[in-house]
Image: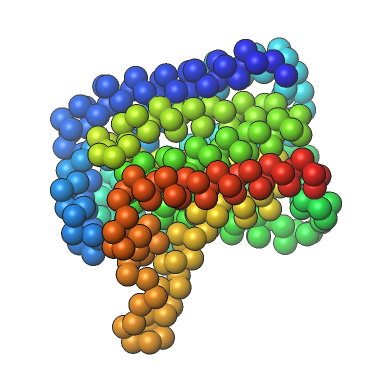
Length: 333
């Protein structure tokens, strides 16, 4: 393993993201690209009204520039020796950027309308499935098959149904990550641990090119956290949260082990499941609730937890989930 390429990816990913904040945040203020706070959210979130959104552009550029610097080094080291590995890394990055572009459209329309509603749900789902399908097609054309590795079980061939299940899982994950973005620093913290864990898993499997991508993404999250930690000076918006969801999905599918998303995505799944359970129970009982508010991080807010405490607690869960995934790779593959 060549440590120089990892150091380069981490330094550039962190540096570009952190430095962009000094320019982009005032620019977003000037454009009046402020976040519109939901009426149904916690009342104390109203003081966040007008905080610049679309800050996800910072770490998207950070990751892209980091990989632009790292890819020539990766080629010289033989990390991209097969078309499939190139598709897993470059195609995965392209998928994440594609989801980020959908988020950008959603944020931009929301800002123009001055309300927390951009693209319709149907429009978002159609675009998201299109991006997921393009990524899976890229892998298939590069020689990937319909089998997947499940730790402690080995290879399992799902046939052509794999593509349907994979697309549903990718889109579900991306939206789960989007639900995790609701308080200062939460999504950034959780995704830092997810990307770091997936990078370590890739390194353990000698998928260095994919590991470098994970390092770049994790470092960019830290660069963004400098501006997004409570009290946040900028929000990532759907631009950032959809990109991060695409990145986590790309790393897991690049490893050919989407099953790792179960432990690594514990926080993400809890967030989206809390919403599904709340809505289902509310309709079935004609107005009763399981949680005080969803997604579940708002429930903890309503219980008196501070935003910093929630970030710390959820971050710990993400860390433990990532450690469990790493153990699965070490001992179950």
